[in-house]
Amino acid sequence: MAAELVEAMNMVKSFRVLDLQTLLSSVGRSKSGLKQDLVSRALRLVQGECSPELLREIRQLYESRFPKKAARAAVAAAAVPVGLGVGGSRTGYHSSPSPSPNSSSSSSSSSSSSSLRSGARSQVGSYLNGLDKPPQSRQAAGSVKLASLPFYQTLEVLLPPTELVPQNSEKLQDTPCAFELSKAQVERIRNSRELDTGLKSIQVVLRLCYADTSGVQEDQYPPNIAIKVNHSYCHVPGYYPSNKPGVEPRRPCRPVNITSYLSTATNRLVVTWGNYGKRYCVALDLVQVLTSEELFAMMKRFSVKSPEQCREIIQDKLRYDPDSEIATTGLRVSLMCPLVKMRLAVPCRALTCAHLQCFDGVFFLQMNEKKPTWTCPVCDKPASFELLIIDGLLWELLKETEDVEEIEYLADGSWRPIREEKVRDRDRERSNTPEYPVMQIGSPEVNGHSPAHSSGSQGGAGGPGAVVDLTQDSSTEEEEEESEGDSEESDERPAPKRGRYAYDKDLVTAY
Image (cartoon, rainbow, N blue to C red; front, side, top):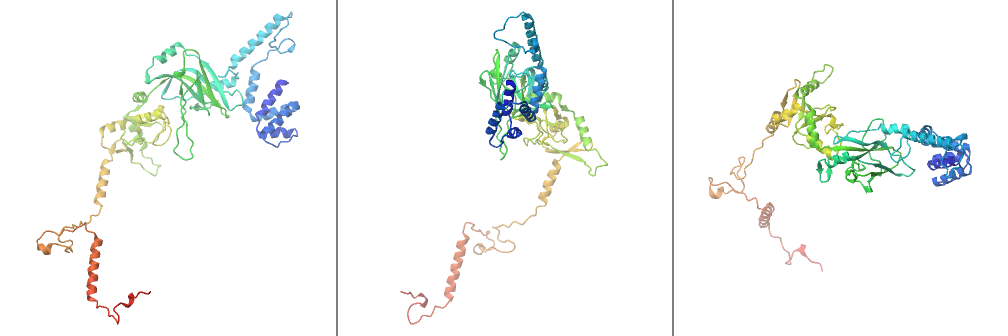
């Protein structure tokens, strides 16, 4: 009964506010107050009135709240048998066992019960943190499949995908693990080539993903992830900054290299993660890291589509369809890479893409080596490394044409450059530009009129053309002309008549 009481109290502590209110209202208690008040009230209820009806109500609420955990507990209880002693009493360990004539039978029964427990535990298996795991969860964790990574070639599996199981109700969980490398694995890592200073091509990487068996799982970090190997924290990739307002920064989920933290003895690994309702798996692999140059060499060896196959694809796209209202007579393809806006060197595209436009394969691999997205830059559809091909026909055309930026595929599989049409369009635009007469300022006659300021009167009719001083300010000329006009008008205007006094009437000063 004490065990059931402790179990009921743990269930009550995991209830939400609605569950606590339902429990308290079912027994006629007050359901008002904060969550901590409801929890303390429910715990006092369990301790004071521990009836079978109350325990049944608590278990039903818990099963409705956590159906998966209840099912796992039922499977684990059914899988692990409990050894029974003589008279139906439970066998266990006693500090001072009393001798009895049936000591041999009791010892045999206890050994058989312990063997049953050990056999059941070996069949059930254990989690990474040492807790017992039911067969159903073992199968679920074992059937999780991680996605293959082009730049990581798996050599050996050190730890298959194993589920991270919370040990308590805390949000931050620590999952320990211990493993040891063999001598052959240590020598393999030590003798591998260096990609960079202190960075070997053969590494031990840790991968994390969702514990989902419905399909292939991509790498996914739990929240608050931290990895400690032999009392040293490993470097985990940070977040990518987001330039868009309102968009949270995204974290690249890559395999974590833990090679430099390992030793030849037993290695102890602790994964710290946030328990927020989602299930995660951890795996350890011995991999060989490949570069973009090595992947490109593999593409040239295995993924080149012949020109004849490419012509067949073009003819299929341009074949006449009587049911279609639009007849396509040609397909234009640019010879410029949409990624870097430069001329293509190695034309690539994915098998799943419906377009014939290609992108540069070398730049595409280099970009995914730094920031793996594996997305087609033309149609934004997934373009994984396994689906990439090299267009052999366009590769030959790039070698034949050097100053062509665009071509057009025809229905018979042939092609023609678009350069001539562009030049023709440019000439047509130039020819359609209207031409206006150009006025020469220094000529003696412009449109049949002589310039205003000309030196012809001084130097004769056959003298040089008039020179106009463009540095002279036009406002000063206008002011001089106005002043001259005012002087002429003042000379012609009669003097004002003066009266008896020698002063003007309009200029009398008032004192």
